[in-house]
Length: 316
Ligand SMILES: [Fe+2]
Image 1: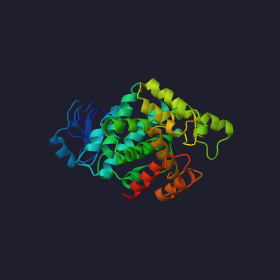
Image 2 (image 1 turned 60 degrees about the vertical axis):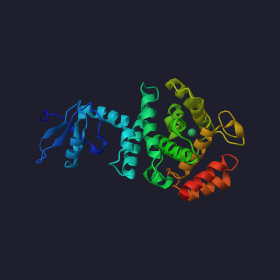
Image 3 (image 1 turned 135 degrees about the vertical axis):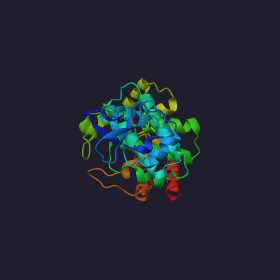
Image 4 (image 1 turned 30 degrees about the horizontal axis):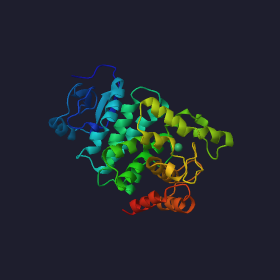
């Protein structure tokens, strides 16, 4: 079967065609003269061992432009099998999962009320949990793939992978780890209801702007409830990630033991990512500089046992 006349094609990442996956779009290869496309796999085919062998010989795969959205959806849905693929080195699959998760999070922030957000978030979390459970997932290897320019959606991804690494390090497992992933990934979702100019302002916020910004944990909590999240720990992770142990945080001014484990972990990873990320008004710090600031200036805000765990993770 040959290309239809007038069809535009986009290249796709062939590593995402994991064995056993069923495609709901057709995939093409260009012929040696690179003038026409010929079909590689028809829509509704399953990627089998034979097609994986043939794939090795092919440099680039293509998809018809009108099916590109289906491919994006497929990639998000299969993050977990990509993360678990034995054929792809850790750093590569981590960057694939990171990139696809960033796209999905960007969409989630643009449209937090869309149907299907819960499944999308779950697929990202499953991918991250699978990555975090691999031995190579050290803090430094994960930091290498994390974006170091600040965007709200990549910040959420960074906080999520750091939180999962930390949670795994202190012994959380299975469902606890998954719930931790969900809470940390959605922790700033309430920022989608804060004015864009405030979110992207270069430099210090005015008092009025800060008051609006302070509403994001509460809004995030509301959005999470609307999405169908009922787990109290996840909801606390979202609502209480700006609480401080000395009671000077927001939105509820919780003190010490009133702040549960999930928001404590997210708070530490939130600050760590903010310090190790570049903004237009400040450079990125190294992980050691960031932890030094956290130890010296935030001991009344953050759970220092978790900060010390972060230090151990940096040394591991
Ligand atoms: Fe936040």
